[in-house]
Length: 271
Figure 1 (cartoon, rainbow, N blue to C red):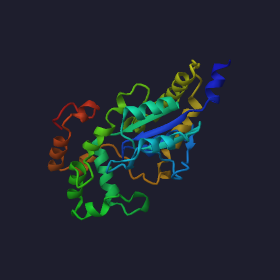
Figure 2: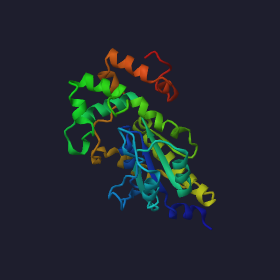
Figure 3: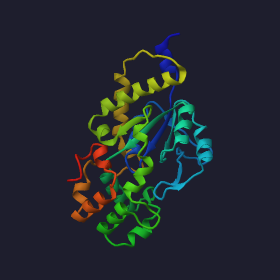
Figure 4: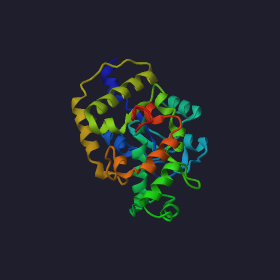
């Protein structure tokens, strides 16, 4: 059997698990030359999340999520805002999915959520917009996003549900900042990761093909960020312009487990 030919004939099943709003759109854009969105027959959308509302963490029955995910076809992808569970991880493994986990500096996530709330674009309407806008100006809204408010957990409380994903060895870790700074390397890693995942599923070892042309297509696709309905700016380090001293201290209080340091965004708590 021609192992290299099989590698390209066997298309991966992709599931992009994103911590909102960490850049799920960017990962989807990057793999566009490899996979097209899978429209769920249940929702009509390319989403199969374990939360009915990713910002309140209102759970969806895992059996419903599994029903949607089971529709996934080779060469297609679903996007998902889904916290980690052993059952979901096991289901995705046996589904043969190539899972991408998207994460970003949680402080920039907070700022992205702030502008999500402030946006009047229909595609960006935050489910708690009215409640948050009633708090007053940007500073008060950002405090609520960081610390949480009435049914909407703060950023780090929401992160706790996603935190185990980066430790799953067969899941691809898509760090937003790396994808912006080194898209060629991340795209190449994604292709090789998919080949490795297919090899795990089918018990094959694929020779490594020349990925240069495909990588360039992926980089170009990722660069077309305006194609995303939820894309705003995607700047790295925006939090420095938006956080006051009060926001900094509040964030430090909510990051009790020291995730900024664990994820490599800070050396410790002195920032």
